[in-house]
Amino acid sequence: MSTDLARRLRRNASPPELAMWRMLWPLRQEGWHFRRQMQLGPYYVDFVCVNAGLVIEIDGDSHALTEDSDRTRDDYLSARGLLVLRFSNHDVMNNAEGVYQSVVSTLTAARATGDTPTPDPSPQGGGRRKGKAAPQVRGEGRAEASP
Image 1 (cartoon, rainbow, N blue to C red):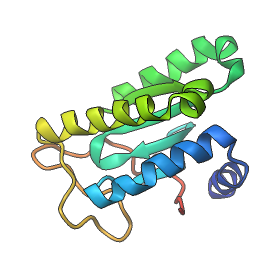
Image 2: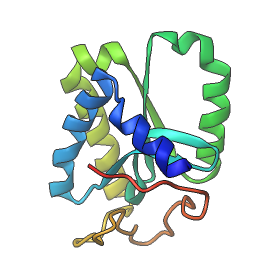
Image 3: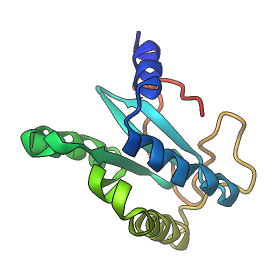
Image 4: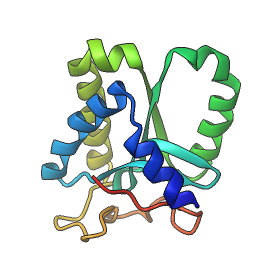
């Protein structure tokens, strides 16, 4: 059931989510493997790079109505060793370069602290962090993602 929901979420991606995916996809050349609409525990995250411990959330116009639940969600993810970056739909669509630079600088910082992907990530993706254990996201009902 969770795989079906993840697939449905990917198929019905919003324009800002599609724009973000187009930004993230080329980062695979640098060894960063992102997944879309992946289940982490009780939550589905918009994008996750497991080997960097990074979750990216795109907040729509109704975000102001969900700030408390977003905070609970962020606390849950942070407790599992994940960093959450949030961008508004408006920023993704109108400040793509700024959003991209923010993501790249976060990934660069992860690499500088030793949280680098393996040179040859596994075919299943995700790679491994050098020097640190990967965040605990497996075994929490994650759904497989496809590009």
